[in-house]
Amino acid sequence: MLPTANPAAAQHSSLHPAFYIIIWITLSSGVIVFNKWILHTAGFAYPLFLTTWHLIFATVMTQLMARYTKMLDSRHNVPMTRAVYFQAIVPIGVFFSLSLICGNLAYLHLSVSFVQMLKATNSVATLLATWVLGVAPVRIDVLAKVSIIVIGVIVASIGEINFSLIGFIYQFSATIFESVRLVMVQRLLSSADFKMDPLVSLYYFAPACMVMNTVATLFFEVPRMSVEDLRSIGLSTLLANASVAFALNVAVVFLVSKTSALVMTLSGVLKDIILVIASLVIFHDPVTMTQVVGYTVALLGLLYYKLGDKVFADVAIKVRQHIPKSSTRRWTLPATLLVIVLIFLLWYSGTASTYFEELNVGH
Image 1 (tube, rainbow, N blue to C red):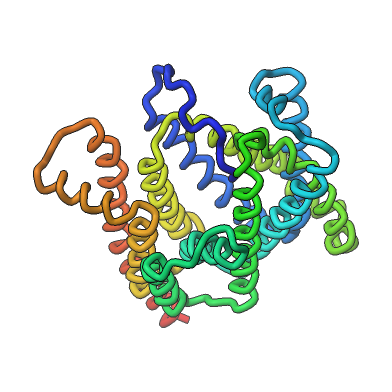
Image 2 (tube, rainbow, N blue to C red; image 1 turned 90 degrees about the vertical axis):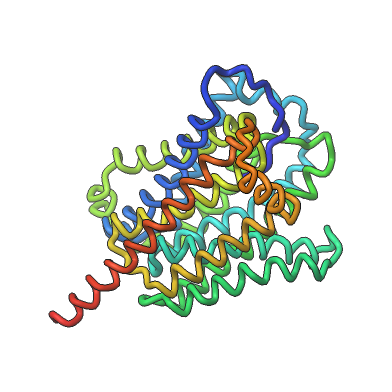
């Protein structure tokens, strides 16, 4: 997702921010679970084709929305020229495509739960990319903070039962490509003239990504695809999948205008945990206690890095004093849910581990 230009957009809606958070979590989790089901469970092992299909759908929908709605009118404020498009948008699109492709390839070899654990390092990779590309100065204190995330992910990786090196490499590559893309976007958006919300960004990036992915799909996947493959998955399934993916981009536009950075951070962590639990329930992915401990450490490190010392101190003070302020209530709900799902994850991982041990003994 790309940053929005209007985080302080009008907040006159009668709907509670929690509504937008729930919609975003549902769609974000739904896209990942849906993709995993298509690529792995349904046996449609064509990640390039699926990514290209999403981009074709997004290109068509953003063009229609630009023509018949006002949701993309802010694009008129962006001084997009042919030179800017090919020098800035296309390179970003290349990394965007590579990130999507490698991310989907990872789901062919790794469980949803383990992929989510690995994704905890996205912030670390982005931070390192800003240092390598000279966007931000190197800070040892920040490096110490993010090292907590790395340690947690390493522990979670050690505890993975069905570890796949090729899947790990795909996900690691997706993380690298995504971090470089985000830094390039940061550079582009550093100019006030190029502020774009996620939908406008998709309007510009989707066509370029679509062309690149189409070429790759024609070379690597189409030769081994058959009509039966498409018939088995069904056009209705592909349409539903692309619709959910596109709806997520629309939901992000509303989410960033209705919530604060703190709430979005907590909601993002909550979403990741829900995805791990969904993977356990839907795909019966085994999660060990070692992974739970490692992932918990990584998530706490992620929160510490994103929220900072001051916010953590403020939260601790408010909890001790039991101050019922509106600002406190905003993060109380997601934080409470975070604790509940962590407890459930610990309990479920224990029962799941026992189940798989008994299953192995039975065989």
